[in-house]
Image (cartoon, rainbow, N blue to C red):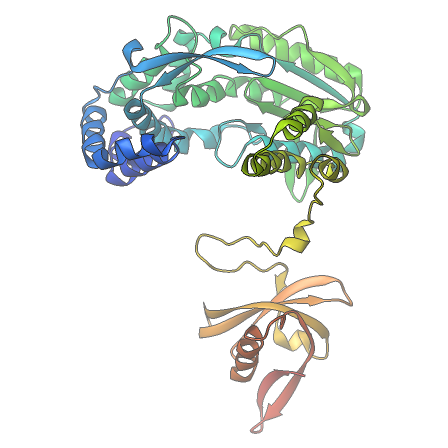
Amino acid sequence: MTNQIPLDNLIPEIVSDENMFESFDYLVGHLEHVKQREKYFPYRETIVRQLQKEIGEGSFRIGKEDVKNIHVVDGPKERDVQAPTVVKRIGIHAIMVVVEKYTYPTLIKNSAASIKGRGMHWLHHIVEDDISNAPEQSLYYYQNDIHHYYDCISQERMKKVIREYVKDAVLLQMLDNFITLLPSGLSKGLRSSQCFANLYLNEVDKEMLEHVKSYEKDGETHYLYYRYCDDTVMLAGTKKELWELRNIHVAAMARIGLKVKPSEAVRPITEGLDYLGYIHYGSHSLLRKRTKQNAARKLAKVKSRKRRQQIIGSFKGMAVHADCKHLYHILTGQRMKKFSEMGVVYTPADGKKRFPGKTMRLGDLVREKLEIHDYEAGIKTSQGEGRYLVSFFNPAEKIWGKFFTASEEMKNILDQISDIEDGFPFETVIEREVFDGNKVKYRFT
């Protein structure tokens, strides 16, 4: 199966047992009520086999009879959403997981929303980092969003865009069906629409990267342009630069049949950029006022201890990404812990530890006062198996590093210390000892 754009022959990957059963488990496992989950799990095999047959032969379709129209109120926003039946949702999920796997890498880095690993908080921190790293280029911001974005997407253009990425004839029939579920625009309830909406603006995003401001850091170009679904922000050093960028952006949107809302604005960053649930002021960021008020009102009314903890947990999930420790204490009566106090570390999928700093030769560390922080056993290198990789910090030079050792003495000591409560980190000086004429060994002292 090829992964070259435009994509072809994706059906075998979509209908594979691994993808189909994972899609079933994900969708059913995320149903809100236990009774709903219990209703579908006994028929897991039957549902998956039926969906494999329909998708495999290209007959899988979503019709009006397969969706329920729901009116949703989210703060000041109201919208009608189409909710497919659970079985249809499983089928859509299975298809789109594979389509997104190959199409999302074509999006610009600073686009987010409904992209795995690239959500609201992820983009929020990118904006914070860019403002900090390029302060002279981030004195002003331009912000807009699109008037009724999903409703104004042209179905014919959407089909053409999809064909730039997919040429699998069987798959295209099903994707076209997702696009045309409604008489016009895209459905706000189908998982497929999230992907389509991102791809629809990819052309505009790439055009804007040719004009927006950028800076270099660590050998990478960072563009001061951000898009979360249809909400776009650009940064620059002057208002004039931003109005010029605004005109280019609005013209590009108009070419694909979209109109920017009149609420667009160019303002100093010090007035506060309201974006992604936070207000960015350049030097710091705070929670949006509505978020604070909603949390305060809910906490004032709630009587159930369990419900109170749920509200606090939800609020903390937002507050930890901004400068809100004092606010969190005022509303909850709790102190927000520092990350360094929690003892939580990243655990990679392969179970191996990742240590910071460069790998150094033991011979270069002799007579250096070091702090030994951790180690990984059973490492295979070009010199042989059974090595230990040791993580250290040099307090004199204030640098992290790591070294490999095959010394049975050092390995035994590390294993003993790992069994001692609070054994790591420990201070040591590594010494070199010559024995048997010209053999060398290293040891902790």
